[in-house]
Length: 392
View 1: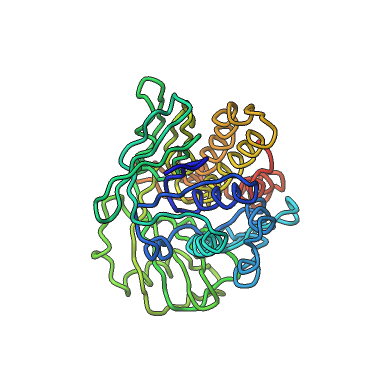
View 2 (view 1 turned 90 degrees about the vertical axis):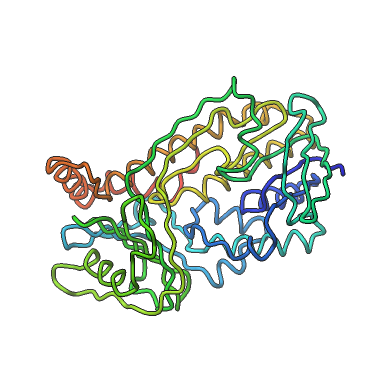
């Protein structure tokens, strides 16, 4: 099998890259080890940066997002029994969209198939070969165990932290940077209308809590828990009680709605970066190259920014014969990656209760939250990073 760009992974990054390349007249094939149903049901992030939302619209994928998603013009920081709103348009002129990654993937799959795109589901990549040659190939196996090879000009690995892409880079050229946090998130989906109009980020002495949403009738909420937590330890009643405690306002003016919990999951908290993000004809994008703790809402957005950069670089390569963008891809992408890593680390450190924290550390957190609430430049810095830096 032969194509121009071989893409490993049918998550939002791989699918969006394939879609953008199609718009630029560049052929691609997407290999995905899971079946279509799994890809379309996998629960992930739900905050879409201003610039990424614009890119979805410009590429013809924004209609359902604008009809069914939520435009959010701010978030609430809740601490010490008080709430403070960060007004995005006032501070930055931008906003974000609440639109689940699951829905982005559904739209991308439908569009790629409608456009005649090739997505090979249940096709597990087993090796990436010849990345220092002009004809790399990806060996893969079907669900029936039949082996095949995809020959291409370039390989883009969008196959996540545990995929084959990153491990296909020569060990001698790779540097990795890693931080594992001593806590995790217990996330739930619940059939209950959201109790807020915008996301609530709550810092409490018992731990962090986040209130988000998926639709007008489905809420998405998270609790900070110890890293080794098992969801079986948390009954529905215990979850709702803990959420109510962490979100509580001193004046009692806000009440958390409750309802049937339909899903529980544990999200580990980790920061991770691989450098470089390109070697020879192999490029890494998304979680294959970097992971951020979800506090800053950057994981999905970084992945989409990676492939937006790659798609334009590949367009220039084939339309203009200019490979400068491909040559600069790793350095260019990593500038944004490290800014997002810092913001995610900062938000995580600001809002969570560290088991090893001293009273001094806790007062430092409190002091900075009060500073954000009182100082427009501090609030603007948060808003600029949250909504997405246009250029880095």
